[in-house]
Image 1 (cartoon, chains in turn purple, red):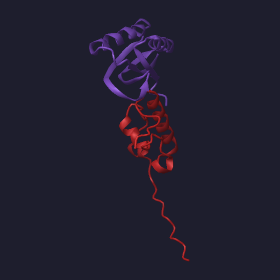
Image 2 (cartoon, chains in turn cyan, red):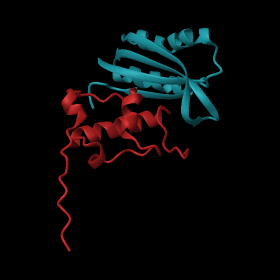
Image 3 (spheres, chains in turn orange, yellow):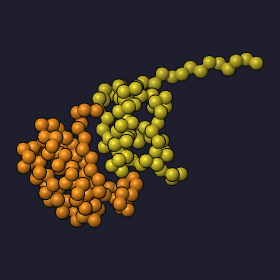
Length: 96
Length: 78
C-alpha cells in the first residue's frame, strides 16, 4: 500500500452540488480495491493558466488516498476516460 | 585607467535550506511564482540563490504545476 495524491481538473460546466458525488463515484474503485481515501479537498472553480479543451476555467479537486499501485492506475484510467475530467495528476508526495 | 573595483558578490543562502523545507509542493503557486520570471520562465540558480537540490525540486514542482494549468508555460502579457 502506498500513499498517493491525485489532482483532478473537472469540466467547469458541472453543477456545484454534483462535484462531490461524481468524485465519490470515481473513488469507489479505491474502496473496492481495499484502499482508503483520507481526504477529498475540493478547491472549486479556478482560472486555468492556459486553455484546456477550449475552457478558461476548471474545477480543481485534490484527493489523498492510500492504495495498491494497480488500483491507482485503474482510477487514473477511469478518470481519463470520463468526459467531465479535463486533466489528472497522480503524485507520491513522499518520493521527490 | 584604473581598474574597476572588484565586485563583492553577496553570498545568497538557499531559502529552502534556511526554512528547512524538504518538500516543495507544486500546489503552492504563491511560493513558486517567486521562482518564475514575469514571462513564466524558471529563474536560474544564480538569480534565486537556491542550492542544487532545491533548485531541482523547485523546477520539478513548477513543471508539475504547469501541467495542471496552475502556472503558465508562457505569458506574453506586458
